[in-house]
Image (cartoon, rainbow, N blue to C red; front, top):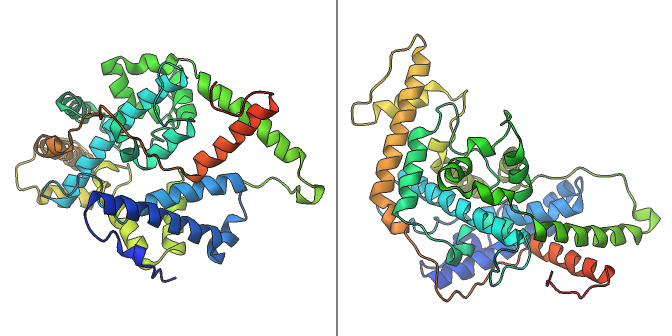
Length: 371
């Protein structure tokens, strides 16, 4: 499955306008391939069409970033993995700030130029730079994240696969009285940040916009189902999950070229220090400590593997804190005073927008977003 289109060679230069143009065109190319090429079409016909559209859009966004270094990564020099791990930390800071904005937007506490429906926040999850004019990173943010790295329980791993902007899921987890074993919110940077900044209060705001959108979407979908001819009514198909990491890797390995899969693996390896799982092979920790180039304390323990794992984890935290001190200034930013937002209008946003406007018509309201 050779992918020979010139866009697979990446942007022609590092110029920001050139890169943005390439991102837009490459995203559209991936969408077209996944919507038309038989290997994709035959696979996706086994799933609900609306969830397939969302999966394709999310996959395309992510694939673009297999081919490009994250924003800011070229400003600094040093160990590539360390720098990209710092980028991950900065991304986590920005995602939490954006989620707090989303909570206020949903409660109608603020208006944001260019933000029309809630699904746009989910699209920013794929590319936080699309919302860059709304956000900032400063020394206080870095210090708080360093505290998080230092205080986080060892049995948890950094990258909890938290759906950064999935408001319904995050609010559901947060509202649980007792953190359950599978409750990612209580294992995350979001929970830590909320406790120390008081932003947990935002989770208790009403979801006025989201509830209204769901009402209109349900009206539109009911009309669609009602108007379907009997022969088009087939047994319900399963959904395809845009956050299914195993499925995403399966697609990258079996449906894309070897070159694309190599880039997928390379991108995931950048975040490897965060992905601490209980069954991680201990040899990796031993190799890390052997290459540390410094003395790393190790605690006495009847289980030598547990002791090695703790030592490796403490060392990772120490290195990450040092890297944040060294490189973080290259990522500091302030929101633009006169933003000119140009948001990527992806498939998910377009579909929800059409249904909301149609739902308002069905409810004898003006087909606009003034609600």
